[in-house]
Length: 460
Image (cartoon, rainbow, N blue to C red; front, side, top):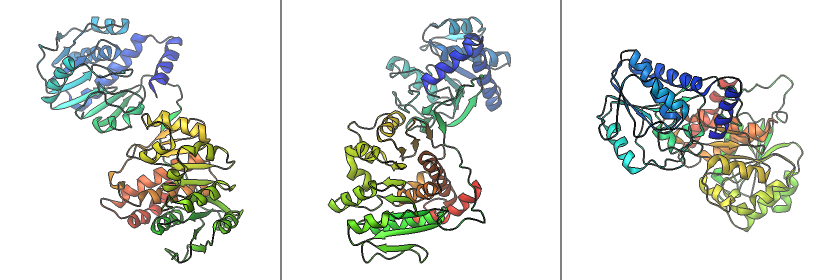
């Protein structure tokens, strides 16, 4: 949940008769039990801020104290909220100032949580770093202090934690970079939140195999439009074929060699010829962009693809060619459209630089009336209705040439099956990441493609 969604969900519980004190008790005792299971009686220092995150810290401290743990609370300020003041009133152990605090084997960060909008002041942060550095285990409660809840932005240069314990629900920054890289292991504590969110962790897709009545066209015909760099289109076509499409064609200039005998290559003489070929009603999805180029011919190919009535995946050079006119060009289409930019390509589609991955994607998806998959180690998928998913299974080995072309082909195969653009993008991203994990380290694009049937099998 975003910070606003979390606040609303908590208010629903309060309106239903659950007190703020009770919510804090649930959160603090749940986190304390998790800490106890992880580290038992390890001497513990809990850094408590003046807000409700600090209140959670007092609850954690008292629960651990009653278990016999050597616990010390360090508080730079008195609590400022009624619930935090009550939590402190129940604390029976010792409390020290920042200046007087000495490191302990376990450091628990309850300084600031959800709602932080600026950096922790350097006078406090100096002591934070000092106490953090000498601990053997470091645990953040809800969020590490200095992290903005919804964006993944780190206001301070934070060291990595061992564990982050999310309270009530996971927040966007638990999965968005650069914050994700300093979270350590993620665990969640249930405090009774029942409200729905427009944001989710990207789920494993549920797929079904072909029936006895299916044929190559009913399983989906994917048309890949090749451009100046032919290798990219070949990877896209091979990926579409191995991720379930019933029929794959490549439309290319004369001299293009098929990557496999089962993939049909049709020669395109000019734009008019391409227009005629793409008008084939049997085409279930078109891919344009991998290896397209950025010249006038690329612009003509883009305009031709946009004018079709078939679902369309736009990737790589197609997005750069579209540029700031992307939303106007795509919003006029009646068929599903999916754009798969990386951060640099995304910035070329907007008048402003990319800052807030989810919010910026939602804005562009709404304006363009399409689905957006923003690639990266923290891939975000957004539908035109604002529904969004964050991928939780990143693989750093995907940072190699050709993998984006493969992703476009996988998504096209899902789109060709008849699902919505948002579902196709989510399913394609999951399959892509899972195939990367199966491929192991230092794989080639071809090795990644070879793992796609195994990923499909896991989803059947």
